[in-house]
Amino acid sequence: MAPEAFESNLLLGGMPAAIRAEFREVLSFVDLPARLMLERRDRPVEHAYFPTAGIARSCRARRAG
View 1 (spheres, one colour):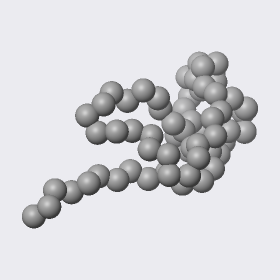
View 2 (cartoon, rainbow, N blue to C red):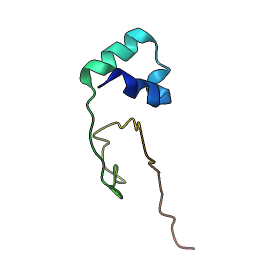
View 3 (cartoon, rainbow, N blue to C red):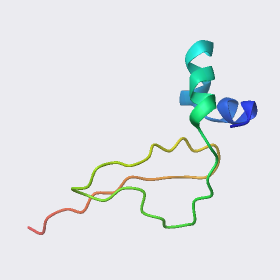
View 4 (cartoon, helix red, strand yellow):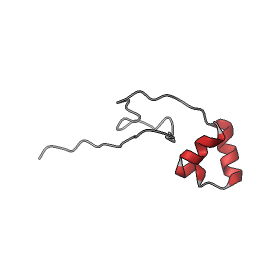
């Protein structure tokens, strides 16, 4: 992952340098198409995403009534 990506993500950019270096070794860029569902209810989380551009949102369906 490019060093400038850490600057554009507040969570990554706020990490201590040593931890940031460890993350940099294992992170990779992925293109996320619009409306891609990143997680599904009642399923294990498979990946962590650190957006460097765009918007991601978390939604929860409410029960009727």
